[in-house]
Image (cartoon, rainbow over all chains, first blue to last red; front, side, top):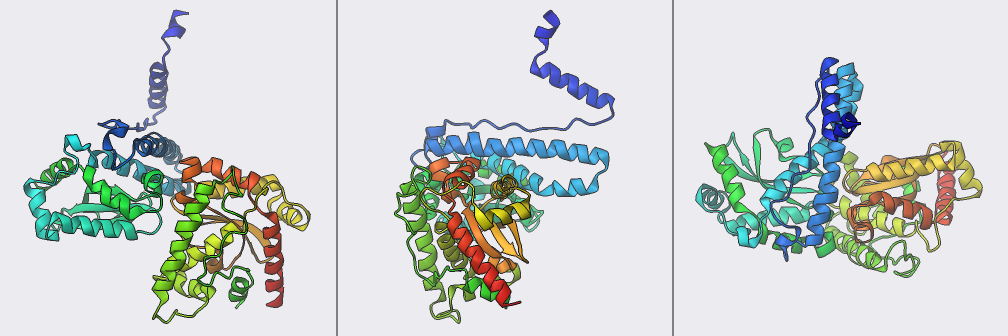
Length: 231
Length: 220
């Protein structure tokens, strides 16, 4: 029948949302995997195409899928007024929501060399780095050392403390976003040091990954964020 | 204390030595590749041992047994610097000995009886162990452990192991990504199933259980 053939997935989703609204329930905002602004192989040789594809299509996608599931369950628990279910869901939300937040930033923190990857920051961020760390080399050395020393899984960050108006280097465990280390912290550059971020290429030699990742760090993006937050 | 006795009788005597697995590095193929063993044992485990040696040199931990270092640096979860290397040295030796060529499948005898007693069935244990290993977020380990005359499944983050939590470890699977990434990439559930179906040494688990019961009863 003509009507049945018009029932696309989007239409059915629309019907579900409408019926949710009729029942007085909000329909929740779910998330999708963001596209990368470059090909998987575009960051070679610093990061292999194989890693980029698995990292994006498998790991980040899993965080998105699991985050959406956790949000659906949270929505139901909130609507039912089930307080312990709400609390119990917090770790799944932190893991998977954090994973989605962090990886979304990470893809923007990277750029192919021919699109400026590795080019030192100019403008106000460059100046701030020199002020706080002596030089870009000083910052890179500090972040690489902290990234290498991180035990288990996590991230090393360059952040802006909006309140104290200074740059900070910090690490977070697992998929904790930088904001869990301080409410006024804004992430500028995050480097994933989970083993999945480098293992197929660098194996156990995390310091070698950290040495090479700087060649594809997109300082233009970090500068944009910095300048926007400094206004 | 009973915990110290449990640690001492666990038959892992790493004591800063990189002991090779009780099989050649290619013996677990095709279920765990030689390449994985070369890196996991040859680089990761070796580094924990070497770094521990450097770390305790000249400190008050120098000359202490591995078990002593682990129990003392756990510090109720507020980990002291040597904990990571010490516990990981212990955990990895325990892990190699938890596997064998031609392993896996269902255990028998007393061990099966106890699994059926404490988990209702082997299948329920299998599912619970799988779930623990699959849901340990980030780096860590899943365990079958023994405490208060009961078997239980546990999962721990990073380097933490049941010894510091008052339980006797019987079986472990390493779920740090380096343990499975070369063979399975992101597919941790496939790695866990392969471990359970093809690698577990129930003989090792049985002899550890025997030691655990002896240690428990001797402190009663």
